[in-house]
Length: 376
Ligand SMILES: [Zn+2]
Image (tube, rainbow, N blue to C red; front, side):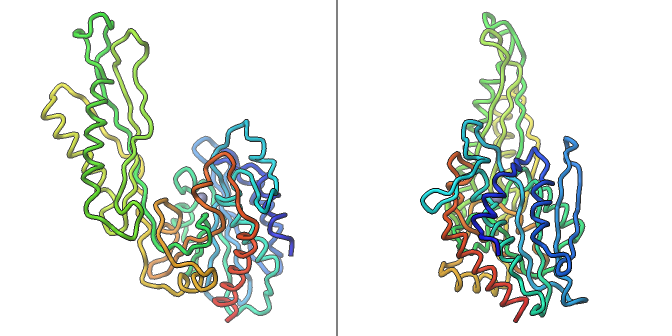
């Protein structure tokens, strides 16, 4: 078995920012699946800019005509990195940690999968094992949605890799995204009455969004931190010059719905607040365009996988406030658990790292889970 840290160092040197093709990384991963043991199937597609993306499903050939018992799921793309961060794609092992883009989110988990499958004793399998590698998770879980539409994943239990510090995660918030376009009328800034400032109106819209965010704080869901859905106005751009009354301003707003409430509740509250604002300021022109509405990761009925991972890692099952591919890929009635080495608070940042001790522990836990479900 190649050491997991060596595999991770290799993986980080293959850059897979979502805008790039992930094919070289998939080709590297494929070398770990001995073809007499594994059947490999690529699901390639072109993304919106024409770049080749590949989803990969690997399934053990043995035993034949049996439903797989467990799937290990991992995305292959990463978020971008500052070009000044030299270790981003030249990873280093320093004081028990591996630094580099994706070390934690989520190539660390991918390295654990590859280390554990390369040591798999196929002859002992009582049920097949699946490995599912996806593209474009960081830009809308596009690869996972395509695999779900193709019904490509057959196992009823999924371990979905994300950096949870080896805590099994059984529920997560969803994700919504919309753009609000505020329209005004341009004029020379010396004569503001001749126009209407889209930026002043956008300020009114922002306070309306903030009121919607306040209303979302009830009811509360104590399993989550924070215990309610949240809204963020993360981007704003408007105006063309300092001496022009701005004619347009755009606000990008996202929300993270909690399981148990309608995923579009934030959207409906923002719309209500906008309607209230329009009644108060009839000249204001603002339009909201929903762009994404990913469902929350609802806790399922089954707990066998969650309980097993909890026993193995010694950590109590928990929830998270970020999204993942679990709600898209879990078959109805099945169980999905988000799990992996590293910490989401150090991911998506310069200086991202994963502790090597967690990588090694994760390999052991994956091998134990495979033994429990596929070799039992
Ligand atoms: Zn991730």
